[in-house]
Image (spheres, rainbow, N blue to C red):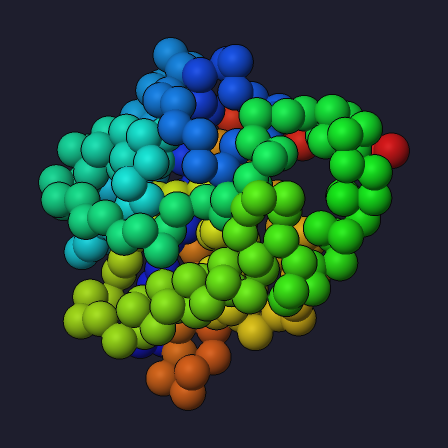
Length: 207
């Protein structure tokens, strides 16, 4: 192992925005989210991160500020960590999006590089951002780096690091403010060493 990466999805946003497509909309944290972020900081502190890099969107930057205060490390921001742009789907529930744009969810789940949400971001552009972050992680001087960002972009970065196939991001579900850890090797490989550590929400029941 040459580096350890800690991925933290932002804590719970304001309740009016939960269970909706939430990309470039910019709510802050709910009261429960503030407490989740505090607990995430306690967990991360034990790993002694040397750098904390966050998305500039409020729900991530507020989470990162609380985490960083616990760890005694300043926050850096990186616009490549902003969530994918859902375009016209922003703020809709899954059911509302499916009704308004029939077939859109099937097209999304195929994760083709030329797909984009109506009025939103193309997947090839999104994947380029994930690759840029992965390159920064490998090339930077820090040995222990934390990212505080959004579920979609963190899943994309995780799959880039692990060399998982294109539809891999949908196989991971990152919980609010939970900790996922990855070890980067000298040969360019990576190993998933921890997943959703400290999650406070209940796993979804089987269908």
